Image 1 (cartoon, one colour):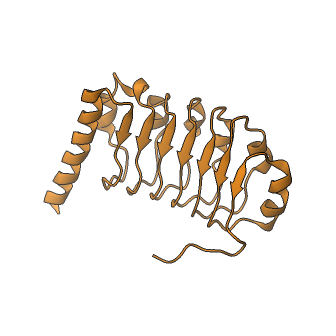
Image 2 (cartoon, helix red, strand yellow):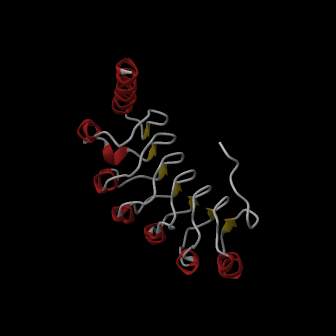
Length: 184
């Protein structure tokens, strides 16, 4: 057990160091068994955090992200958080004014994260396979850059299915009513 934990920590450290040393605009910490974003990374990345445009934290065990995460990486263009245990986003996500795409698929959202509707550059929202029933259709319709919202495999209310199509000018992906994700 301790050996596996040590290997996981070493893997995260190696990936962070690669980002810093190469001057990359990408931080990929996918599949690192993270239960939270490591606090030490903020210090290591403090001089390059504004240069990071893509963070991948997919397929970890994250239950939440902090406001510090959102304010530290304020220049993000893409945030990949699929396959975690997230059920909400901090309000500070509204500060990600350059964000173009966010992937929150396969998490535990029951409520649509409405803070996303305030992001002027956001083009793609992926919330596939969550537990979302209601969607702020009018707010989404007012988003200037929005091109795609994926809500497949969510138990969407019938009203959303009826109201949304005539109001929106982006692609709204929905599963047939009653469709569920296959069991794991």
